Image (cartoon, rainbow, N blue to C red):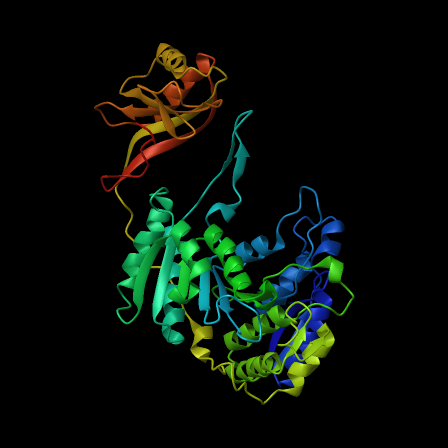
Length: 478
């Protein structure tokens, strides 16, 4: 018997959770349930994360969480509970199977069967944002080698266990050459360890277009957090309905399972919501805890229910559907079919090994790190970069470091800038060393000189070479 933590959430959450739990019990799942309260009520009690300390204790003890959707109140100060849970518990892999159920669910892509594996902790979702000037705001994109190694190796292990033939990587490394470049590089490195699996890489914009138009080209897709968040919803929708998609969030020793849709408060209490997303999430949970046989029983019964035309109103279609059911009645229809298998849709089998991955990043020796300069960011309302450069140079330098260029929003505007380039009040001023070894004290001294000259410093970023390779990008522009 495995004890899991459950939360019924907000809006339609209690209805779809009750239907799901009834199915789990009827199927003979060896699970005990410990319920916690999360979501809107907890937020409004003054907890800006939407979860109380005692609920965290349940999650840490049971390590498996089945979560219904919640409502986050409008207004500032409220954190995303999903993001918080993923980061606090180290749930680095978001796994979303996106499958078409043609002809019983209307779709333009009847043979689609794609699994999207999204990195779940890093990227822009690090949540580090700053307002830097009157006009410019910043969000930091953080990609780490250990985080990237974990998610990519998970994708290849998942593909191997489920006998998938290909893993595709989506990045935008033609623009973000260091962050997305690292993701692509690690994909190539780890992919070489799996000669039995086909590998390919797409730039995310054309990859997204291909996914929306020809999803049968893809099998398993792995990508950084933001792209994965967007495209997993796109992929779920083009199967026929976001309401049919479940999601697993997997970490080292912890896991959370949920439907991908929201709490739909307008449908609350009407017995009208489709519980399928949460049912399919619970099926992933069963596989994770080693009850693959029960998972197969439930999903095959669910497929048989679709095949028999017993549909909730979101997927009901005249001429295809036999009967329109409410939330509770749909759950009962699945229970009635436990032990049966579909005849037209493909019956499922699950490999219990998917619940036992041990993904550990490698230890890499530290690089030889050399400080060679600094980018000092200034706020200046003077929009003439030549005048700004003149003021910086007039402020002086401590020796062995000098102004090399100025950029505005990443585009070089000095020296030899174009007058047509639009500029804001946010300037990056790059200083690099001359001949001697550069010390951080010299950077501090340079910043002090700028401060003494009345220039408004808003941040700085040191420039390093790692094993002789530049750890920073050049400016865009001429």
